[in-house]
Length: 358
Image (cartoon, rainbow, N blue to C red):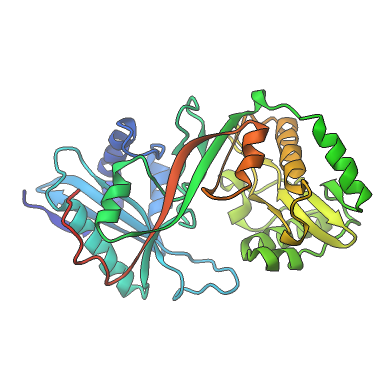
């Protein structure tokens, strides 16, 4: 088959979405089909690259990559990768080199942009929504990598990508959640140690740098900074990365914390709600210096209660496949639905990989 590679354009939206929808319906990807307006907003603009494979006048495959435009401390345009968003080839046009040619085009664009790596991870700023298997259409707002049960995982490995990290996604309808009465004794024991666990209120401790330093997360440092600022000013978090569905919050949101004196030694939240009914939060964290006391367990269960109060119908999250915190989520009633891999490839590597066309 003869085909050409050229830039993906907004005029390709209809054909590109047809391929995505067909792949999604066959279960080849978990990504939720997009509307045209959402596709154009997510896939085009600064720091976005797309390429199309055409056979005659027909679009037979496409690829997309994105780069960060906002950076946390320590991040730069030079030390962050280009993120591979999607690589799709229409049924009937596979195993003819289309996928390999598209991938080569994106690699060239990445090198020209000064990138040294191509990566598939949840840090991709496109934040593709995916459908949770066995969840009746419920979805999650960000794909944490490439799903290991799809053909794309093996294909990327064959093209020179390497496993960096493995994650699992978990899910629970909140109608199934029940507070475990044994947690009441944990809360009392923590209080006896001088540790208050509950909603943050003005006048409580606000020192969180020690915890963020020890867990090594600038992202959570930024979340805490923005959410506490919102409480002091009465204005909502100004960082769009912390807005569910891209909608600015109406004001300060509940933040669940473990506080000892002036120090925040654990947190989860902020508590919000997506249009889908998903309880939304940025993560959960316990200071390693205060681990093993049940702080994370109490915080997570308080989060489930807060979701119910907010009107959420389900909870979904992902975490490291080897993260011991999985025990907290499983005990609360969540179940594992999918396994994901963060993949990366240093540019210049992979040219000698075995030829498995897609």
